[in-house]
Amino acid sequence: MASMQQPAAELTVPRWTDLLSGHQSRHPRFWIGLGKQESRVLADRLSAIPVEKPIHISGLARSGTTILLQLLSSHPELSSHRYRDFPPVFTPWFWNWFIERAGHGSGDSSERAHGDGIVVTPESPEAIEEVIWMAFFPQQHDPEVPSELSADTSNSEFEEFYRDHIRKLLLIRGGRRYLSKGNYNLTRLPYLLKLFPDASFILPVRDPAWHIASLMRQHDRFCREHRRDVRLQRHMSRSGHFEFGLDRRPINCGNTDVTRKILELWSADHEVEGWALYWKDVYGYVADVLESDAALRRATMVVNYRTLCDRPAHVMRAVLAHCELPSSGVDLIAEAADTVRHPSYYQPSFDEQQLALIADVTGSVASRLYDLSA
Image (cartoon, rainbow, N blue to C red; front, side, top):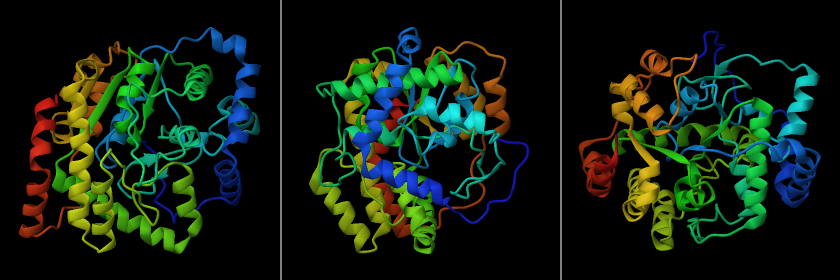
């Protein structure tokens, strides 16, 4: 989605990033304190900024969340995190003040680490807020602990910090509404709706065979990179990305026995079966939540990835309507039509037995979600 692209280079993590993110990971309470101090400095300005109609994009990695984030982030009413916001996520105003005065510029564009043709710069939108969730809910990525946060969840310190954090991003970037991409928010939808009753949720869902093929491809890619440079593994874990690589961790959606089974299958090199069971567990949980909560169902748009690629203008028009986003100087419908395509850089290579296994494990849940999709 950028006009000037540099070729994908060997993945690296600058030493200062590794050191700063390491301190932040080891001392979250210190950084929470800095974030609160920043909020006190900005108190008068933050108090004048309402948090209205935030938009949350969520889905398992490789489901189309990044495409939707990049498109929607072009809307002038929306503000989101950017790559440059990491590591010091807890103090976005201080950090952006420094970046702007240091004259770093927007940076060169290049293909992102996934090798999937998506071009990014330090100014590109990215999933960053998971760092904050990990600081306040430190067991969220422990496979032995259910990660679901419900409407009964209460964490007043987090809720105040999170609202102020959103206000800071709106202050920095000049938008009126917050746009978030958070894969792990799939198990927090009722809690987020409780915090923001006027929120909109976008949940892309992809054909299981294609989705699993993409997940396996990325896992292999990042395992190789992590073995080459351990700093890359640390970087992913510290930024809240456990989807692939040597620190891969499944989301525990409430059934710890199933999560353990997924880990056992992966450990035994039964990758296809493990991913199929994981897909079924995560999206089965999502389907259950949507079918049992009418308010959440109304607030949520399930996007069929195949339909997004086949009819991008149609889907983007529906997304804008669902999110109550007015027309803007940027024609997102035309942009979607021009840029969204089916992936051409790989094809699933499963044999008939593997395809039958995927269909058998995921079929019933996929049907439920397709019935809910736009």
